[in-house]
Structure formats: structure tokens, C-alpha cells
Image (tube, rainbow over all chains, first blue to last red; front, top):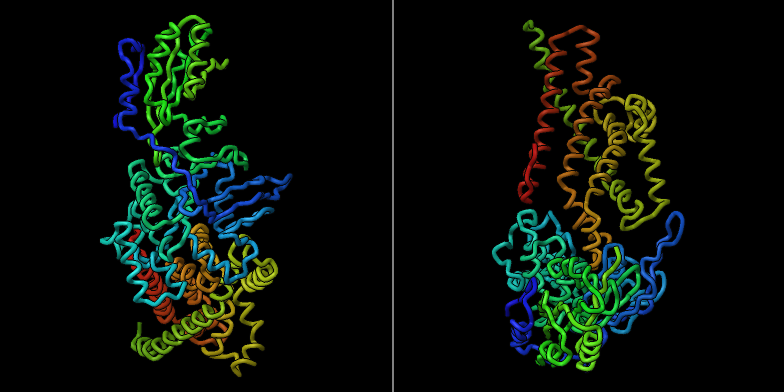
Length: 379
Length: 228
């Protein structure tokens, strides 16, 4: 499917509906896959984390509650300092919440004794931004480490290591040392090591932030396969919406230690509520040239339309043009391919009498097209 | 360079060279035996490490600092009663091993502490999440990861001990130091003095080369670039 980005004043009359047709010809708009049998694997209940610092208490996390179901790929997105690292560290038992609870299969990890805690830790795997591989061990040795400390017999270790090397596609690098590997290969070793003990949950701490875009895609597709084929629940934190878009089914947006928005990736993408979320969705290449925003007036409105579900099939723009005697000018259009659905976005300019524009907007609401009027922000 | 001197050198030096090697390596061995556990405990009980414990850290740190602040010549004399009690005499090479060990142990403890602290904390977090015990972290992570740095530390300690052992020779400890003081200083035998100095230099060079060689081969095996 091609992505259309149209700049300039190509009038809608000249280019009737072609964009929408191209955008949605593939009929990807299946119903939202809702989990009919939610099976919570991790429940975060009102978790707060305070750090006592010289002058005041710093609230890294404030009353965070999230439920992660089995099979989810749950993305937590936030800027640096928003608290996402602290949250994943709490899940990994590297930090302890100041208040609130984290339940794993209904059991609070704070109440676990030493043995139960070790079992929990072996039931979660974790991968890191900087891989954290052991420089003193080969690839095979790194992957074998979690098995070794769990007292798995040597022959079983070897078999499992070979299996995992196959899974991550590193069979020929078995005897290499980490410093001889590329970033992507290192992360593959990290993934294999994290999966060695058959964990139910994989925690990803900015796992692709140190990788180039192409390697990032490869690693994300590997993670997607692991989630689908091995039924490993994935919790990942990131500051990149692209990562969420490519593999997550659910997303939570964290800001200043609070969850400001949460839901299925589809809904959050199609209808973001919070400014922070919208900010994350803004892609540098999708920025509207400022001169267009400058020109808005009651007779010239700039709209961001989001198409999802069935509405995408209707020729809405040409209807508006016909019915309300306004001109529509398409400035930008793109599609976001999510896990199960596709969302189309169009930035258009409506030009015409104020009354006509007003009615056009009402019509859009009636047709359940999500739109947003882009205002001229005085700078 | 008279024939008499050459004969004297033959008589004295091989035996005393051996005595020096024996003193240095025996005391290095015992110093590692004492210093390594102290270095490990200092590392893991430090603030923010895997077994943070203020009291243990402070106590050990104080002991190590006191041990390191003694000039070796004074330590050697101060330890005479202890050495006599332990070995039965304060003279000779075996007796010298006691003060040498006690001087080197806190030194090596500190060096090993700083080697172990070079291991990236994030790696430790990674293996904690995997459910490693403290013992597993020490034996399977900290020591192997820090191995090249620990070997450099041991090399440095052995070289220091060669210097100290010469000082031990001044008070009847035997070895090349004693030859230097007896023949070179008291009897003005420049020839013996020069040969002794050359032997000491060679000994230091060989230890340095050997240590460096081991470190380099480990790093090479681990695929790390070696910067000279």
C-alpha cells in the first residue's frame, strides 16, 4: 500500500476522492479485536514511587493503575523523566513502589518470599537499551546463563541454547563474543537470553532506542513473532510512537508520573484526547507548513480528519463540497498501519462562507468522522 | 670485575634471587587470599551495590585504610613480635612473608574493589532480574567480567612486593635486597650492587610482561580491541 503525501493546492475537484480510495482500497478496517476473556497477568494497582531528595520528595510515579492481560503487547510511552523507566523497574523488582501493589497472577510481588520472588524473576525476561550482555561469555554462554543459575542440566542447556539461537537467527554467531556483534545482533542475544527460562512476560526497556531504524524494524518484528507464536506477554517502554504503532495492541501514555491516556492502540491513534498523546502522534514529516495555519479565518478552516472503521468507505469530502458549497483543499494525507487496523489521516482546508463551513463540520460529526480544527496559535 | 667477584656473584645471587621470588610470590598468594574476599565485600556492601551495608563497609574500609597508611619499613618493625609469635623468628625469608603479606593485602583489596566496581551496574541489574543469587553474581559475573582488570591489579601488587622485599632485606629478610645492602652498601662492592639491580629490574620486567600478556590474551579472546 502506498502512502500519499500531497503538498500544495491540488483541488478536490481535480482529484476526486482518489486519496481516500487509495488509502482504503485494501479494506483493512476489520472490527476492533477486543479481548473477550480478559486474563490479567500483571495488575498495577495505585502504584506510587517517591524519591527523597535533598529538598523535597520527588514523585516519580503517582497512583498508577494498569492491567496487562495475557498475550498483550502493552506499550508505555513517555518522554524521558516521565516515570516510565521507574515503572518498568518496579515490574522487574529493581525498584520497590512506595505505595500501591503489583500483582502477578493475583499475587502481590511485594509479599513474595525469597523463593517465590526468584520464581517470579525467572518468569519474567527483560531486555535493555544497552543490551547488558556479559563480555566474559560467548553468545551461547550469555544465553545459557539464566539456565545455569536455575541448575538446568548441561545437555538440556545446550539444547535450549541451540533452539533459541535458531529462534533469533544467530546460529552462526554461537561462539562469538558480544564485542564482535552489531547492535541488532546484541539485542537478539538479549532476547534469546531473556526467553531462555520460558518466561510468561518479556519486559522491554527502550529495547530499540540504541538501534538504527532498519534494525529496529527487524527487532520489533522478532518481538511480534515471539508474542504471537510463543504467547509471551510483552510490556515495553519507549519514547517512540512508531514502536507502539508497529507492535503494540495497547498503549498507556505517561506524563509526570501519571497515566494521562490509555487504551487500545487503535483508539488512541484514531482519537487521541490529551495534548501529550497528540504530540507523540505528530511526525516530523507530517507537520503542517506554518503559513497554512497562519491563514485560518472563519472562511478558511484547517481540519485534521481521521478515518477509521466503515466511514472510510464513504466519499465524504466530495459530499461536503457538493452539499455545503465549500471548497476543499487537501494538504496532507497519510495512513498509519497498526497491528490489526489502518487509520487514515487527512489534513484539509475548507474554504467558503462561514455558514457553509459550520454545516460541513456538523455533517462530519453526523457521519462520525473524527475531526479536529487546527487553530492559529499566537506565537 | 675480578674473578673473585664473579665467583661471589655465582655463590650468592642464584640463591638470593630464588629467595626473593619465593618471598614475593608466597606473600602475593597470601595477600590475594586475604585481599580478594575483602575487596569483594567492600564492593558489594558499598552504597547502591547488591548488598549495601554501611557498617560492614565502614569497618572494612577503616581497616584497609589503616593498613595502607603504614609505611612498609615501619610496618615491618612493628610486626616483629607478631611474626615471632607466628613463625618463631623474625629473621629470614619465611619470616619476611608475614609483613609483606600484611602490607600487600589491603593494597590488593582496594585494587580489586576498584576492578569489581568497573563492572557495569546495568549488567548486574540484568542478572538480578534473572534471579541470580549473591554468590552467583560474585562468582559468575563480577569476577569473570573484571578478570583482566584483576590480573592487572595482581601484577601491580607483585611488582610492589618486589620493591618491598628488597626493603625486607635491609633488616635480615634475605633475598636480593639483603645482598645489595651487605655487599653493595656495607662493603662498597659496586659489581655485586650493579648485578643485583639488573636482576631486580629484569624480575620486574618479566612480571610486568607476563601480567600484560595474560590481560591481552583474555581481551583478545573476548574480541576487544587492544590499545597499547
